Length: 132
Image 1 (cartoon, rainbow, N blue to C red):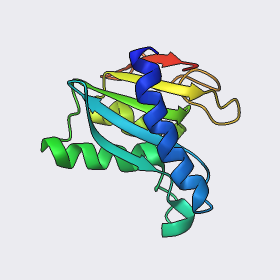
Image 2: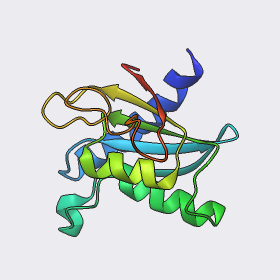
Image 3: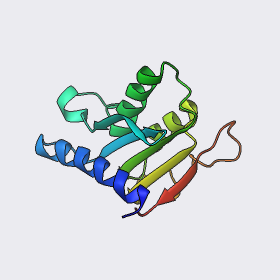
């Protein structure tokens, strides 16, 4: 098992938690220095909050853990390709690397529908690994 597969398994466990409570089964974790510093799953239905995506929640938690909105040196693992909102949050939080499992051809902004995460016109872009 590769490092990326190991961490994606943890994100998949978060996705199962979402599925168990009737949410869209998406999970995310953030890793810094080989340590999982944040984990989350979708909570849109539970919280009735359109921003309660797994990535968004994990990014908020990670910022709290490290005491900075700049998540430099972190990697985001997420089970589904990030949407436009989450791609924007990734860019704004300065996460340098994103690893996602499944592509989202209807709403993915990590390369499927469009590539906001690596958009050269932004002041920050992240590298992307897909299909893990």
